Amino acid sequence: MISVRDLRKHYQVHKRPPGLKAALRSVFHRTYTSVKAVDGISFDIQPGERVGFLGPNGAGKTTTLKVLSGLLHPSSGEVRVDGHVPRHREEAFLKKIMLVTGQKQQLIWDLPPSETLELNRAIYDVPTAQYKQTLDELVTLLDLGELLGKPTRQLSLGERMKCELAVALIHRPKVLFLDEPTIGLDVSMQATMRAFIKDYNERHGATLILTSHYMDDVAALCPRIIVIDKGIVSYDGGLDALVKRVRPEKRVVLRLSQAVDAPDLAALGKVVSHDPLSAVLQVSQDAVNATVSRVLSTLPVMDLTVENAPLEEVMSELFAESKARRQGAGV
Ligand SMILES: Nc1ncnc2c1ncn2[C@@H]1O[C@H](COP(=O)(O)OP(=O)(O)OP(=O)(O)O)[C@@H](O)[C@H]1O
Image 1: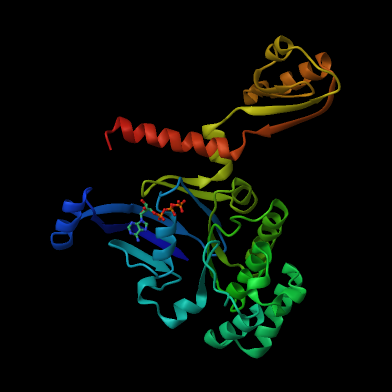
Image 2: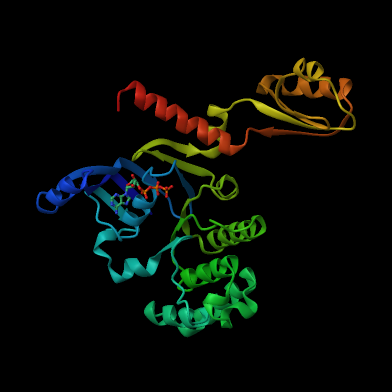
């Protein structure tokens, strides 16, 4: 469905020297530097896959999504989305894809979302029966009810994002590029959006690439992740496999009925955190069973769960690894 081969996108940026004199001189003699936003990435995505596209700030994620949606021309490399070359922006291609960004909106500020939906129906030439059916589905799943009739400027951020998604999906795109779709939303609205996105993918077999700094989005939606750092792919594979590689240890999370002494906990595993009535121990995978039975027989446990390390920690460790590798290589 999506194939990317050795994609590069280098921006030419005007370098403004410090000082008034130098700045004036630069009006006539401009010097440019090249920012390697994407510097040779390759991957393939199959129809219906949900892929998380992760990386630290400035890694090149948005740039890649913009190239895939045909908004930016690549500096070099080959990109195909369902057989189309995105930069040609053929009508058939534009009808198949949608880029949704949490920071920019499609909705027209002074009009109710229903008007933007109508507009998109006309632009994308959606047959009336299909429009009605999709709209009904979106209204139910996203609980849009009265929101569609209110002027956009009166909607809360979460309400607006739900309407943004409805507008983005009214023509049932086969490929969705979601750039931080839950940014700024409260926890329950994030969960609503995630459930809806997963449902859309499963109902319509849509292919989905998602960038998000919220690891809960990634954990809930993306069995596969591609990690990009300084314009280069540093990991492409299963989320579980990544967690196992970077943080093979498990966490034993405890709720206690009475306080325990720190040395008693330390005797059972590495203590990650310890409040009077709760504690988290880190132990190797092989030691989980033995540790759990020792904990249960020696501590006043009210509740015990075994978990992986939080994904945030796994990712920051991965980013730190690739930073150290780059520094070692003098890049
Ligand atoms: N129009 C532009 N002109 C020049 N440089 C740009 C432009 N857009 C992005 N860049 C630079 O390219 C690099 C990659 O930016 P990009 O927005 O793709 O990163 P990102 O991974 O999406 O980051 P974030 O997580 O912060 O949104 C950054 O160094 C950024 O400053």
